[in-house]
Amino acid sequence: MSIIKVENLTKRYGDFEAVKGINFSVHKGEIFGFLGPNGAGKTTTINMLIGLAGITSGSAKLLGYDLTFQAKKAQKYIGIVPDESNLYEELDGFQNLSFCAALYGMKKSERMEKAHELLHRFNLADAGNKPFRAYSRGMKRRLTIAAGIIHDPKILFLDEPTTGIDVASARQIRELILDLNASGTTVFLTTHYIEEAERLCHRIAFIVDGKIVRIGTVNELMSEAQEGTIVQFTLDDASDPGLREALRHRFPEFEEEFISGNIVRIHSPSPTGLMEFMKFFDERKLNIYEAKIIRPSLEDVFVKITGIEINKMAKDKEQYKK
Amino acid sequence: MRSCTAFKNILIKDIKTYYIKPPNISWGIIFPIAWTAMFFVKSQTPIDIRAILPGVMSMSILFGTTSMLAVTITFERRHRSFERLLVAPIELSSLMLAKTLGAILFGIANASVPVIFASFLISLSDINWVLAFISVVLMATTSAFLGLFIAVAVSEVFEAQTFSNFFRFPMIFLCGLFIPVSDLPRIIRPLSYIIPLTYGADLLKLSINNDGHIFPILSLVILVTFGVVLFSLSLKNVKRKWIY
Ligand SMILES: Nc1ncnc2c1ncn2[C@@H]1O[C@H](COP(=O)(O)OP(=O)(O)OP(=O)(O)O)[C@@H](O)[C@H]1O
Ligand SMILES: [Mg+2]
Image 1 (cartoon, rainbow over the protein chains, first blue to last red):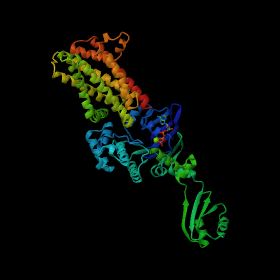
Image 2 (image 1 turned 135 degrees about the vertical axis):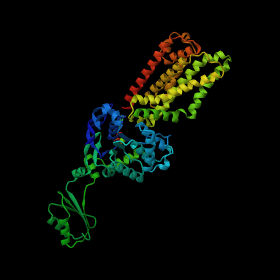
Image 3 (image 1 turned 120 degrees about the vertical axis):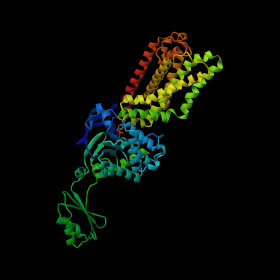
Image 4 (image 1 turned 180 degrees about the vertical axis):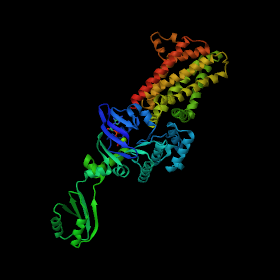
């Protein structure tokens, strides 16, 4: 069942088209990721889905509510964690959470209970009565996530939840996201970290320049980039000059490559196993230290489809955040 | 019910974090005291205090309300916390009312300071309190909505401040509080009649000094109309500019 359905969604700022007629749906219970470089239109799309930006054309439905006309109705069920923490600097952690809960109409006793519970769960119990402005970046992000889920939203939007925070906090946040999802929350997240998308998301959309260029599960995306198979063997001794010739003779349809020292790589145009090769090396009395099938990474897929270097994308982003 | 909780908490948060902060409280007290004292020093007859009371009250309301919206709205907008409110399931009109109600109450509280102050110095027995209260509420509401209109029209806090002065000072000059409208040059007199303060000030003068020049029902209607128009314009601007 799809919980978000977007058709030809377009956003124009003056003459500039930030989102160019995108189509996708998010299924109930999944973690759906938007992966793309700076200025791709990720935040703009989220803003349209949460009712913070008007829809220029096309349609977006969330839980059956048409966001062009019924955004306020849908907002009850939405949790939002924006790209920059935007809680109240002068309020403390507890007050911030309690206030956010009140915005969703929660009763006082319920608010207090939930705020305490979340402060604990997010490791912020000690900071509960410190003003938000005194929080570190990672603490701010955690409190912002807590504020986003205090009213038990059916769907949670996270805009770059781990950008600009340290590795340990980022891991903690990823675990929180998985926990939340496990307890039934549908998650829509944007990121420019490919490993994050790969580790967290059930399905990923690549968005570049306001357009979705590919969409699918990690496996689907991978298989698309996979042209054949690469198997790799590390041998005890690959110095025998006759080895290459023998391989070529025995496996004429494959292409072999000798990488530094004793590593042999064999490229196959079609899926293939390791057994045939192992038998071959065994016959030649060569010991195999390691044998593996090399799969392309999601990164390779992204680069192949979009032509954008991921590392550069992440670096640009860090630069930009500073 | 849901909206009620949100409305109440937005208002309470604003009152706690902005309005009852020492600088604002003291401002609300010092300002009317300074004005009253200034006139008092000038001539010490009790009649004068009464004569200037409507003026001091009106100015306290005007300055108190218009300046606060620059903070509660423009400032929160700069810090993006305002986006939290915009994406909350509360109708935009309720949200904006919750944000302005604090300023309205602040304006009313400010207006009562000179009254309390004067009560120690002169007898306030034959004032039409009901009419005085209604005019204070209406003035506070229209000035708060004027402040809202300005806060929505600009994007920086300092712009909001500058812009409100652009409105406030001419309004004080033109509203007939210190110079009767009939004494103003004929050319600028029409201006007096397009600013809400003129009607509020006239109502206050009527209720306190029995010295009104405009038919009170007309003043009431005009003040309400100003309020409605300014509020709807502000709502429209919020939709156009902030949910862009
Ligand atoms: N209010 C606006 N007015 C004009 N252009 C805008 C506005 N908001 C965004 N844009 C433009 O729309 C494009 C998409 O921006 P958006 O913020 O959605 O990108 P993003 O994918 O979230 O990027 P990032 O990774 O930097 O957060 C950008 O070119 C941006 O400059
Ligand atoms: Mg963004």
